[in-house]
Amino acid sequence: VGSEMCIRDRAKIGSIYEQGMGVFTDYVKAYMWYFIAEHKGNRQAGLDRKRITIKMTPTQIDKAQAMARQCLPNESSFC
Image 1 (cartoon, rainbow, N blue to C red):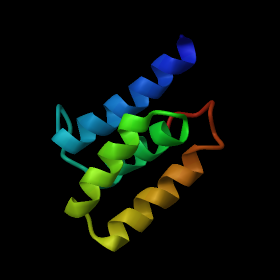
Image 2 (image 1 turned 90 degrees about the vertical axis):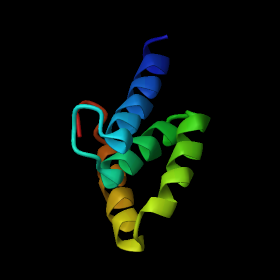
Image 3 (image 1 turned 45 degrees about the vertical axis):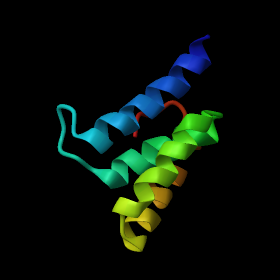
């Protein structure tokens, strides 16, 4: 259950950044968190990630992917 919660939490963080709930809307960070959650097995996060790409430039997508790839190996650190 613990790892499942982490996956859902990561997707929720993506949603928070996408919707600007208590933070500035940031599609790059939203994409990053959705990418990480999808990589960990959250299918809905993958759909969310694909959905927001229409709101992003190719440069933003590249940046978000690079940030996510930096975070993936560092499980113990919070990106």
